Length: 173
Image 1 (spheres, rainbow, N blue to C red):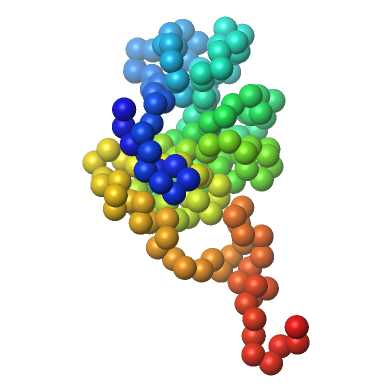
Image 2: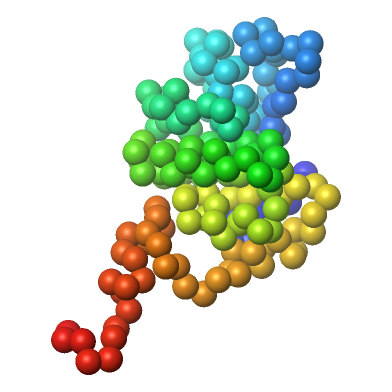
């Protein structure tokens, strides 16, 4: 088992992320037993065969959209979004849409090239779990969740901008 950050704590992870090799296709890959996070395309193409399993979760690649799973979102307790490289920010939009447009309330995990510098912003759009890159120190990475003491803009986690939340001297209350 590896460790992840979940709900601002380091915990053991008992899920396996299924990644397809070059010779595997989403419609034919065999999904192993146990807690497995499958690619969205595997779920979509094998849905009828997998629907009875309650030990599955789905992960989105950065070029996929949350709406592609909208009819099945409620059946999952965990969804993940893959960050293929640090500079690919499309996963932030997927997470925001899963939370705000589709009402997902379960564990939302960032996987892939996940670094400390991203964690504060990832939690702002709805992520509550992070599989930090294997070559990074998870003890250091968790500190990234508290890098900033104040949030200026609105997002999934804060509906009012700072200017609406701050008391000002001389302002009527």
